[in-house]
Length: 259
Image 1 (cartoon, rainbow, N blue to C red):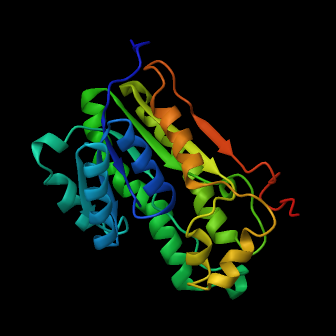
Image 2 (image 1 turned 135 degrees about the horizontal axis):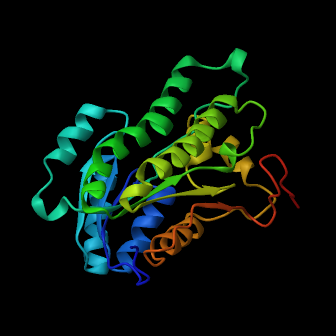
């Protein structure tokens, strides 16, 4: 039987923690006393963040520089964790990206592979590695970071939207697979959040990226981190299955009221 008592602090694993939503979530949960494992590709930034969180919030933080697209590297990293870090209670599958904004006929195969390997395979790889421990303990929580792009498709975003639609489907399937074991599965789906998202999509073109957020107030990464914190702090018998969070100025994937 699921407990009606709020959960005790768990070890939280956050992928893609070097910027944006991942970084904000690490900050929010460290502030609340969670022990953290953070991953990302940018080693120096990741380790600086871990040092900062330990110093600022007096909590343990383990930095693991790794690419979620590399299954062998992930297995090596997480199958060899020190004993005190093995009981991961919460997995935040945050690592993801958009690459390019093109029609399918003009799209880049390299961009497609990068999005598919990160946004879909990355979630599958991390979940396959971490979920068995949760199943064995009959307790755990997986939060997949989706997007409004997983609920709607917009012009020139077909492949990115397809990957986020896949996240929606994977979340539903995981929930069905894990429900007999008391493992919660949730999705948090943001609209427009001002992060490095557009800068990455436009291959470092800062001027083009800035235009995405002109004329309205987008979400901050901290807004999403607050939602993630709310989702994971519900009592044992409560699972917030799906959250869609948008800026007030955004009505849909393609409708944003700009001043």
